[in-house]
Amino acid sequence: MTHRDVAPRSLVRASWEIRPRDGSAPIRGDLRAPRDVPPESAVVICHGFKGFRRWGFFPALARELANRGHAAFTFDFSHNGVGPDGVDFSALELFAEATHSRNVDEIRMVLDAVTNGPLFPRPPRRIGMVGHSRGGGEAVIAVAEDARVDALVTWSAISTVHRWTEAQIAAWERGDTVHVENSRTRQSMPIGPGYWADVKANAARLDVRQAAGRVRVPWLIIHGDADETVPVEEASILHEAAGSDAELLVVEGAGHTFGASHPLGESPPALDRVIEATVDWCAKFVQVADPVL
Image 1 (cartoon, helix red, strand yellow):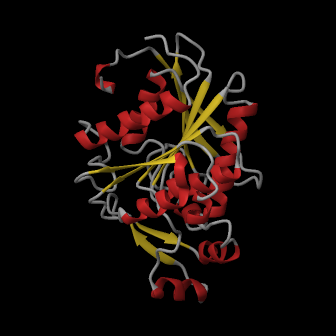
Image 2 (image 1 turned 135 degrees about the vertical axis):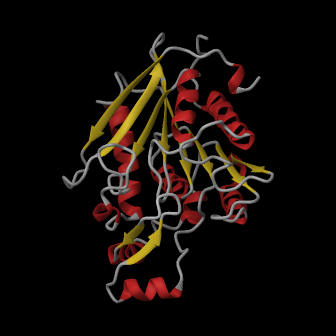
Image 3 (image 1 turned 180 degrees about the horizontal axis):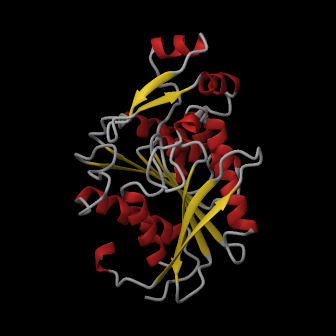
């Protein structure tokens, strides 16, 4: 049985917002949950670089998790560059100031809001986490630091934050801003020197491979063998570091987003397989009781 064979449930969808401790831009998110039975488990979903909570496959994944009985939380990192509409990169001044450390801290802030309110009516009995690309690497670090997460799934996750050219690093060292193109919107997206300062100042914390060795929960590592952005070899690095609690799923012929684009449209077969594997993992390690279907 695949997720296409499961009868859809009536779902509740609500938007939410929390403020980072430094009083800067808010973390905005969406909650999807079954309407008929109060969920006792939650899954937090982290987007990647140049991603956002309403991009492509994130709503589809959240709906399917909610359909299986979880409360599914998608959110935008406060400095991902997306404005209040949740779709357009209209806040590039924030994108310029984004750092890995801020993102990891914000994942833990979302966990705080899920476990202690106000995002969840009562503390969930179990929590899962899903992260894509850069968000996958940051989720690894967050899970290594936080014992509240019971299971992890990463999609196309990075194994290292060191992925920049010598010219880009030299520009940051001079105090300049580096620009990268958004291939979908054609916007030139700025990354300020504070990004690189954070990588240097927090080298030990931001060592994704080392963090992988500290993950002590069931972890499903999913990667396409035709990933054009994060080579599939990085999945093997994470799997080797993680040890016996991790399982590696390599999807043949799949790229970085498993055939998905934005807006999603028809779900491609590779994405269907990845969503089903993720839902099954959460059913095994996060689900508290069989959902009522």
